[in-house]
Length: 439
Image (tube, rainbow, N blue to C red; front, side):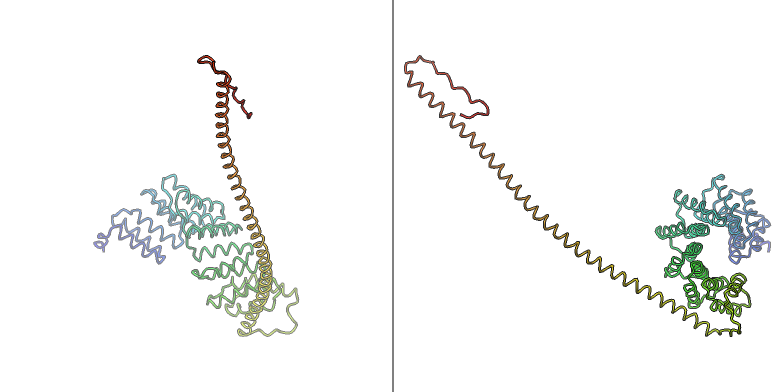
C-alpha cells in the first residue's frame, strides 16, 4: 500500500478528491487530502480547492473556511479557492463572512471572476441586501466580466425578496437582451418576485410563457401563492389542476396556497375537501391554513348541523374540473366582450383613417396645383427677364445709331454754312447726353 501511495502525485489526489466530492462524501475527501501529507507530499492549490468544494457541496462551511484559512498560510490564494470559500459560506447562510472574503480579494490582489461575483451576489441575496447585489452586478460590466445565469438569478431573487418586483422584471429582460439564456431558477425567482406583491397576471405569463423551460414545483407554488394574494381562487385552482396534468405532485405549500385562496373567497366546501384530501394523502394537518380555515368556516356558519358525507376522489376531481371550466367560460365571455369592443374601435379607427386619407389626397391635389402655378410664374419671370435684356440691347444699339446720325448732320451743316473756314477750324461738339436723360 505504501509503495502504491508513493507512486501517486498531487494530481492523482486531486482527481480522487473530486470524485468523492461529487457524491458529497466530504469526510472521504478530507481523508484523501490529509493523506497527501502522510505520503510526504505538499498539498497544492488544486488539492485545497477540490477539498474546499467537497465541504461546500456537503454544506460544511466551517470546515471549508478552515481549509481556506490554512491555504492562505501555506500557499498564495487564487481566485478558485476564494470562489469556493465564498460559495460555501453563502450556502451556509454566513453571508457577511462571504462578503468579507470577497472584499479581501482586493487586499491580496486577486481579481474576482464570474463565479466569485455570482457567489457574492448570492450572499447579498441571503442577507437581504438587494442594493448591494445590484451594485455587484453593475460592477461586473464595469470590469468587463459578463454575468451568467447564476449572477442574474441571484440578483433577481435579491430584488424579489425585498419587494422590488419592477427591478426584478427589468433584470430578467436585461438577461434576455444580453443573450444569457434563462433557466428554471431565474424564472422561479421572477415569479417569486411577482408573488410577493400579488401580481398574479405576470406570474401566470411567466409560468406558461417559456416553451424551452419546464416549470417545477417551485414555479407552480409561487404562481398559486400569487393568485391567492390577488384574490383569484379560480386561477389558483386551475394552476393546482395543471400540476396533476404535468404529473407534478403537490406538497404542503401547494395545498396551503389553494386552500387559503378558497378560504378568502368563502369557498368553504371546496377548501374543506382539499384539506381532507391532503390529510388522507399524507396523514398530516395543514397547521396554518387549515386552522385558519376551520375557524373562519365556523364563524360564517359553513358547517351544517347534519354530518356532511366526504366526497370521494372522483367527485372531488369532477367538482374541481367543473369549477375550472366555469372559470374558463367566464373568461371566454369577458374575452368576447373585449373582442367586440376592440372590433368597434377598429371600425371607428378605420373610418377615421379613410377620412384622413381623403383629406391627405385633397391636400396633395392642392399642393400639385400650387406647384403648377409656381412653375408658370417662375417661367413667366424668366421670360420677362430675357425680354428686358433684349430691350436693353436694342436700346443701346438704337442710341448708338442716333448718335451717329446726329454727328453726321452736324458735320454737314458746318461745311455748308462756312465753306471758307480756315483749315483746322471746327465747330464745337454738341454736349453729351446727361445720365438718365434722352435726346
